[in-house]
Image 1 (tube, rainbow over the protein chains, first blue to last red):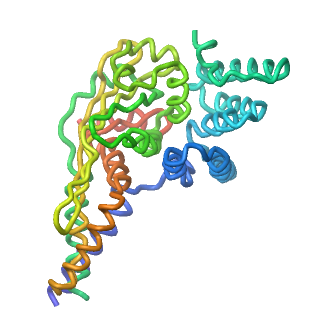
Image 2: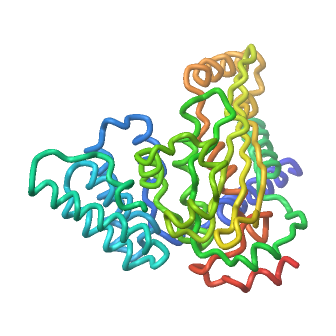
Image 3: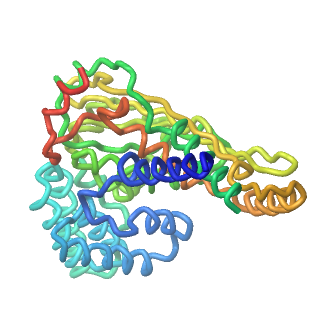
Length: 136
Length: 224
């Protein structure tokens, strides 16, 4: 009997810790952002899948109005890397509007992406590194 | 069965108690309060382990616990790529670079310097012990000064999780679990746990609530 009570007690404490202590409710709708990033580092060549995953997370987060900091920017960068520059700019703008702390970096990214767009229009050769040009 | 469950729960409980939800120790937050950072830039992670993938994998666990403390966290993957494009892929170099220069490049309020001290698996006969250990330093962008630091490690041994009451059956289970862990030791749950625990405040020695939390500037008094 005493053992039974003890084990119930332990189970209750454990449940309490699980709910209260370490895994509290999240402020933002992260979805599976962490495992998406992990998979991205494990298979860096699979850029299309990473883009899809980020899009999914963002759609849910927007619906719930709980978009985490940095997510528009990460999605924008994934778009940028896959060549969708106009969509990338839209997402950099969204990050900037939602998080004033990102202003300086997003300004740079937008300026850089617009430059890239211009280059694309002029010729088909695109440099992959553009941060340096506007980083000064 | 009941014996097994009870032992399992007791061990899980011990893991929880030793792994982070512990009582806070006294820490001086005056520099942190004066700096009052609103945003955190996570710089490339220095790797002192032998696993070359550790810094990338670590990076995937850091944004959520930091942002959930109420700070703007710069997009870690984008920052990593931008620095690489700029010829700053060497984390040791970045850590030794001028803090304020990096700040002005990204427009951050504070920079987080993390070093992976341990990220390894020790293969014993019937089990595999996985260890992670991280060192964190937060520097203010206005002064370049250190405003918060912490070091935390954790050990996980799958052996602790199972006991059927039958020693022979236990041996087989342990051998199987060791084989699985040996093939692919999973560091991620441990890394998540360490990061989750290290930023907790005022329950832990972590970061006071940032501007995006309702407790912002209100949780200082509670702990002191």
